[in-house]
Image 1 (cartoon, rainbow, N blue to C red):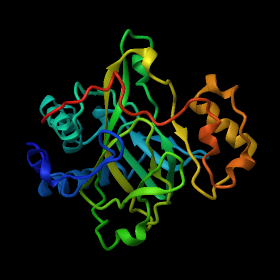
Image 2: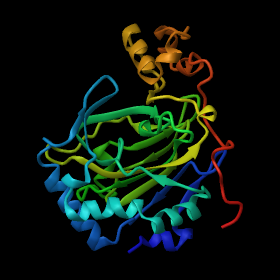
Image 3: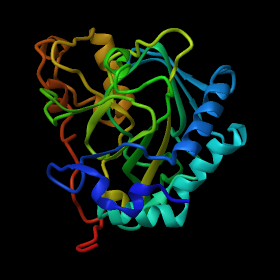
Image 4: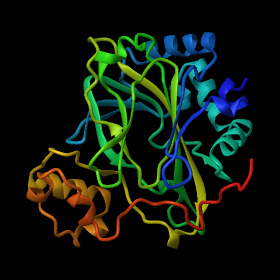
Length: 298
């Protein structure tokens, strides 16, 4: 069963910048009874995080991810499989204008996301190529993310104090251009290449109330020579600063090849500008190109 918004495109709130789609926020994404079942199973599976991958470093704290479908409860697995289905992807293509979307069957970085109280994920640009496609004649470029918030205790009232907003920042990291509270059964669909996004504000719910979401990532086949190859590139918001070692580690993590070309110093970034971007010798927001086909009409 498809979600209602897929059958009625006028329900989607579009915020468009250059091309093709910056972000769509979709309330009541999953049928209510199904959403309640999925949320209950997510609460149970996240009560013990032993099977989850933990992320805890300078850029993200108290964040856990479960990738394996075999370890997911039935209703959760059904949702993930739905997001990969040909019918669902066809509707995504109609909604976004993108063509030939390919889901990641291995959930690299996607699946169940769980952030504990106090946890955060700094603003970043996503990795650009699915690692399992490296070296192929056509590599898989990441182009679209789907996030579905499933915290039953987060409603429009409690969301005002729980923090953990999903944010999108402009190219120069001078302004947050979109902030979405993680209200129960709200989905965010957004174009990823070169887009600065994250959950930089800590999750402030009481102990035991984790920030939980489902995620699915979509790709397109591209000529490797047309893609900038980067891992996750973390960005600094105005007023944020870092030590020299933290700066080097952040850039080296994103691209060891570009690491040797860096000239910017952490003192430049402490001024709250986008010096880290200019230091990356060509790293910029990726927009429409020859390997991102779009539909001219729906």
